[in-house]
Amino acid sequence: MRAADLTTAVVLMAGGALVIWDSLRLGIGWGTDGPRSGFFPFWLAVILIGCCLGIMAQALIRASRKPFMERAALRPVLKMLLPSAGFVLATQFVGLYVATALYMGLYMRWIGRYSWLVTVAVSVAFPVVTFLVFEKWFLVPMPKGPFETWLGY
Image 1: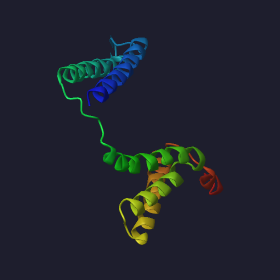
Image 2: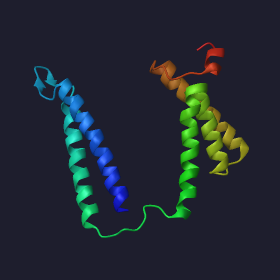
Image 3: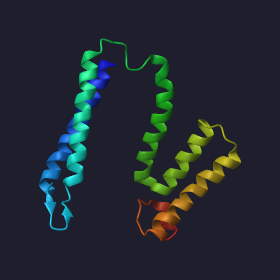
Image 4: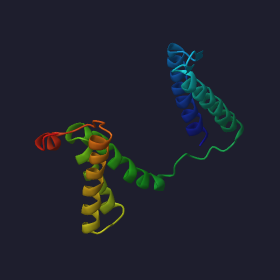
């Protein structure tokens, strides 16, 4: 557990350092019209690094050396990780909406054990509603694939 805590803290601190570096480039001071663009990210990154230092101190003080994850716990983690990774990969090729429908359908049927009717209804309705909200209402373009192109979007 100690190694996982230390590794996570170091990775998050590196991310915080990157945010601080970019915030300094944008400016962290106060301008004539309010805070500059880097003000809030800078201070959030400082807080993040401070929390990571606390996690590192706790991990170093704690004497427990038990493993981060038992072998039996790996299966449920992979049941969550593999479909999510597939969703991210599929989005590149089929677009966000089709990938969402496939992901939700797979996950609802495989993990949730929902009936086919509920699975199809939700996995079709959710991407359609998402499309209407983002593409039509907010006018925010999302990644599209060949299906949306075929429909004229």
